[in-house]
Image (tube, rainbow, N blue to C red; front, side, top):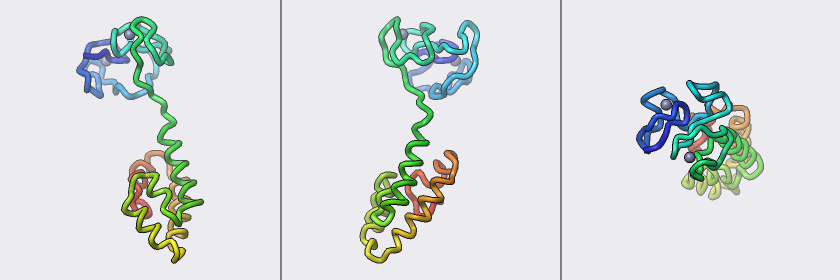
Amino acid sequence: MKHCINCGAEIADDASVCPDCGVNQTTSLEGGHGDRSTNEKYCVDCGELINKQAELCPACGVEQPSHDSGSTDTDKVAAGVLALLLGGLGAHKFYQGNMKLGVVYLCFFWTGIPAVLGLVEGILILIADDEEYEAKFADGSLLGR
Ligand SMILES: [Zn+2]
Ligand SMILES: [Zn+2]
């Protein structure tokens, strides 16, 4: 069992949403809840109230799941920049884990077409917002889905 970061109730280890309060366990908490103030969360392991930013629980020393929200953003920008600069080599496809398409880009590098596609994709990726990127481009499909 682990503790809900929002209400401190005991929930299943693999639960992503707390059945008690309905809060997603991967979210960064906003506002307080019951005894918990805005800048606190419950330790997933021992259920003590701890600082929201704490990486380790001061009471039990267990590492807290991190919620750095910037990660998708970094992926998106990195993929977009790779597409612009090294799109002709399929670098952004490899980065996004689409090896097949990456190899296709690489094989047709000499035609110059992948470079053009990369340029277009780079721009589309960079102007897309996070949700759009996740939905259309994150898996490295050709010119988005
Ligand atoms: Zn809860
Ligand atoms: Zn703890």
